[in-house]
Length: 230
View 1: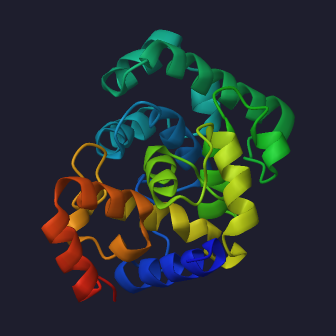
View 2: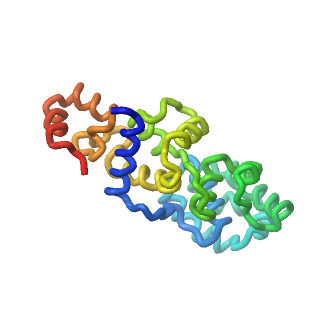
């Protein structure tokens, strides 16, 4: 199967099994809250971040509140997210830059977003896609793992993966690709024990086919005969 046809099929299956409407996994009520939550999500689960942010945003309800906060207070509020010292330092510095350069508003352009402390392309694209609805591809651990397993990118570096996928995926699918792939990664295509034998993507997934043919030849043949498609 040619890659263009494979990608078309992958996108169709994603839309069949996972919601088209993008629903960000990080809880937030405004742009800056999403920015902070995404910074906190580095090396941390979304569920943990969502446990921390309600009290955090109650304690620091505005950009200026973060900009003028004591480092120790922010550290204590986010400690359970891991790497809290660096995260707290970046969040305060980010808030200060927003106040000094952007009047307390979060910019939409990626070139401006990545100048904010603690904000890389992943965080910038989360904000651009979820808040500003600008077509963007967010490369997190799920997107990296599954895109490589599907064989639609050969890169390991997230920035290279982002740029590679931008040349291959239909632009109208960029924003929801992340949330759909996260859902698939949590339910079926897990990091250690993917459920390849019951995966709806099996016939277009080189990794799954190879894995089953090597370890479970009978199950692989049965799955292929049934199609495991929508």
